[in-house]
Length: 152
Image 1 (cartoon, one colour):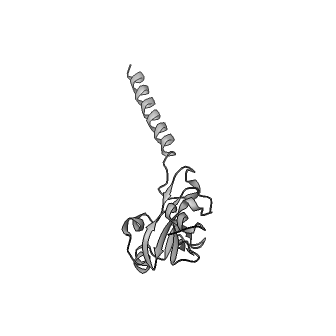
Image 2 (image 1 turned 90 degrees about the vertical axis):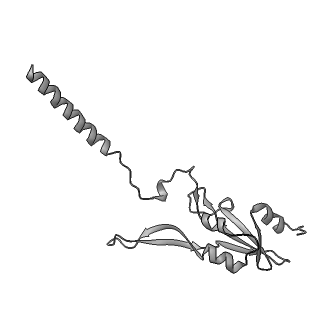
Image 3 (image 1 turned 45 degrees about the vertical axis):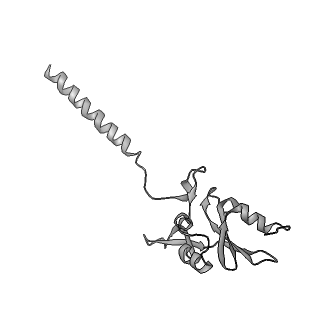
């Protein structure tokens, strides 16, 4: 009887050890890898800056809040190093003077919706200035000002 109990206890420990080893292979790494991002996941950028800016701010004030560079990832400094360096792009990403007006539109990256290495319009947030002051944001206003028959 004692042999049967000790075999049962032994099998219990074997099963616990087996399950522990099996499940330990399921641990995920907390390191962000943009190549493993779910294609449906949206990555927000410049979010805190967009929350802090207000209409009426000067372009210099907006630039002070938003910064002149945006970190979009990190790259290994060298194969011999374990350090990483930031990968940056200009912030704003691009700008456009509206022909024949005193409007300027700056385009900031708002989100990465498709991690494909291409910045498309649906990933940008236009900020619109008139005479150097922020008057609004968003595509409806930008498209109104950019249209050839704009009366704004």
